[in-house]
Length: 143
Ligand code: RB5
Image 1 (cartoon, rainbow, N blue to C red):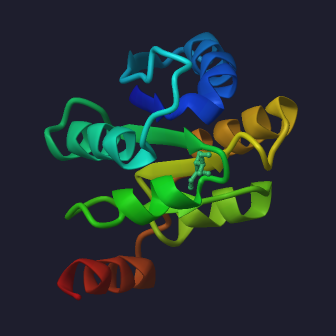
Image 2 (cartoon, rainbow, N blue to C red; image 1 turned 180 degrees about the vertical axis):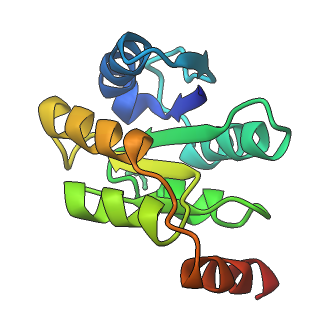
C-alpha cells in the first residue's frame, strides 16, 4: 500500500521512525511533512493527509501530533476519511476490523516508539470484516 504520513513539530522523530518501519514492512511512504522543527499548526498537516486519501494518492494515512487528538478531530471533517486516535493495539485492530479506518492518529507524547510500531503494524495488517459493519460504516458517511 501507499501510506501517507504527516505530523506537526511535536512528532517529527516518531514520524521518522514509523516511516522507516512501514517502508521495511514493504509499503510505499508518502511524506507530507512537516519538515521543520519550528512550531506549526497540526490542522494543516491533518488536511494534507486527508486530502491525499480523498485524491487517491494514498490508501491509508498516519497522522501524528502530540496527542493524536487534534489530528483525528481535523481529519474526520473530510468526507470519506475515518480516522481513529489509538494508543493501544486492541483499538487499532478493531478500528480496521469494524470501522474500516483509513487514517490512524497517534500521539508522540502518549505512545513510545516501540508501542507505536506495534500499533501501526496491526493497523496495517488487519482487514475490514465487512458484513454488518459495512451497513454501520455507510451510516457514518450518511450523517
Ligand atoms: C502541540 O503542542 C500540540 O498541541 C499538538 O501536537 C497536538 O497534541 C494537538 O492535538
